[in-house]
Image 1 (spheres, rainbow, N blue to C red):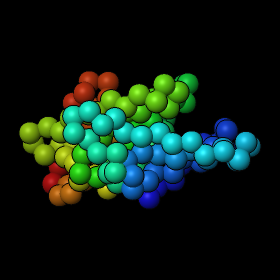
Image 2 (cartoon, rainbow, N blue to C red):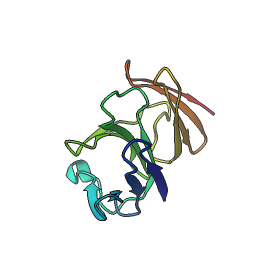
Image 3 (spheres, one colour):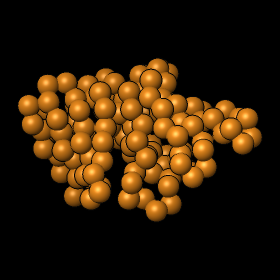
Image 4 (tube, rainbow, N blue to C red):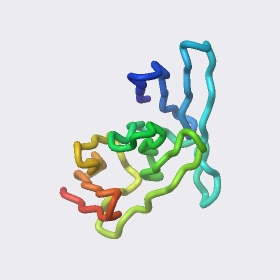
Amino acid sequence: KDFYKDPVTNILWIATEYGGVEKYDPNASKFRRGLLPIERGFSQFSFVSCVLRDRLDPTGQRYWMAVWGIGLFEWNRHTNVFRFIPARPNNALNGEIFDLAQDSDGTLYVANAGGLTVYNPRTNEAHFFN
C-alpha cells in the first residue's frame, strides 16, 4: 500500500498486504518479491504499511519497513536480510505503524497509533510522544 521509486535506477518498490515488497524493474520488465522472515511468529501475510529508503546509506541498500501488527524492520535489499527493531515498553515502535519519515541526520519519525515515535538508528533509542 506504499510505493517508492528509486531515483537512480527507476526501480519501483511496492509494499504489499502479504508481508513483503515487490520489486518492479522497468528496464528488465521483471518483478521480484522480498518476504518477511517467518521466524519469531512473523507472518508473511502481514500488511506492509510503508517502505522508506535510508537517506544516509551511500550504497542505497538499506530500507526501513513498517509492518502493521508487527512493527519496524531494517531491510538490506541486496542481501534480502530483515532485522526486526523491537517495540519498547513506553509504546515506542509498537506494531501499529502508519507512516515513516527520515530527517537529514538519519533520525526516523514513526507515525503510530496514539502518537509519534522518534527513533535514532545509530543509538537504538526510541522516544514516544502522544
